[in-house]
Length: 402
Ligand SMILES: Cc1cc2nc3c(=O)[nH]c(=O)nc-3n(C[C@H](O)[C@H](O)[C@H](O)COP(=O)(O)OP(=O)(O)OC[C@H]3O[C@@H](n4cnc5c(N)ncnc54)[C@H](O)[C@@H]3O)c2cc1C
Image (tube, rainbow, N blue to C red; front, side, top):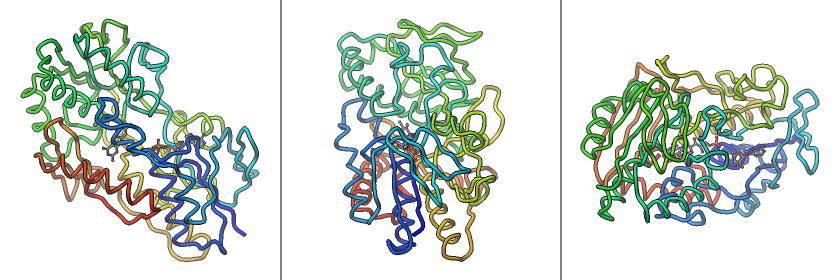
């Protein structure tokens, strides 16, 4: 019996597991999914948890039941190290042997890049994971009782840029609703060379659209900003101003998780996994990777580093390709290699913006952007739909709502 191990139970790991089981029956292979967390969390809704319009329970579900239904074994165990030569995954509980491995372990927030980033090692706040979001939500309650200047943005080298805009727009909306916006100057600081770059070099008219939106909402912004330190009273920019702030949410640059960086020969210097056009490790053809764990070069050089945004939609595209190619390795058939596309809906508080970049790297066949309330409804409907579908172990493609 062929043994497949999947590390990670989020967009990459869950999609790969379900898609593999569709292609390979329980008589052909044993699939074991190991994840640090026992729940699937719809990460794009984390900003809504931070501002209090969702709870974590509403945007997550337990993995065990969904996977059992599809004859996929699940165990909540964090990989500690991978030994590609011996084909072993070591965890604190036991060692697991594999014939094929999928790594979809996402990221580690490299908070050490900027002193004070936080939240558990500095005064800053973050949206990058459920514990950090719960901390932000609690601190935000105190902030709303005693409001003051707010700074939102990204540190140099960040790749997950969109959520910083979503949080800035959501806060503007919330503060106006509470009639305390006049007490809260909002500043956005970003390593992007222009607003709406998103690590994609801009898509269609995103630059003009996002600049207009920021100006309309009186959100000041600094582009090509190098955040150098966060204190409890300010966000400091290298060669720039010290911006007064009593709530600072600066998203960090990302790195690979420790289990991957601790596995010699597997990852690049930042801990991301190099792959070929089939999402296969170049040195270990029985190891595939999907999602944020994959090494991808920036779309183009920028004066301050901005990294490639591996979105949820792209993660699913990679995971589907991984399942197809791994199944082809096992039972014969041609591998596939497709260009990634990006499709996202950005929440803007009282409205939203949709954009599509196909392929993701310019020049593109499609570079489309549209704004309006209907996109906010679409984003909310997609969240419900996605959770409904994923909980039931269905994996049909649903691109439009990301
Ligand atoms: C705040 C926020 C908002 C976002 N909004 C959007 C959006 O609107 N649209 C969009 O397309 N994308 C969005 N994204 C990006 C999207 O969430 C990511 O692309 C997606 O989560 C990546 O999925 P992944 O499976 O690669 O990794 P992750 O979602 O990071 O999951 C990693 C998985 O690996 C597991 N794991 C970690 N370490 C180990 C280990 N050592 N052993 C075993 N398991 C391990 C974890 O438990 C988890 O299950 C957003 C991201 C953030 C942070």
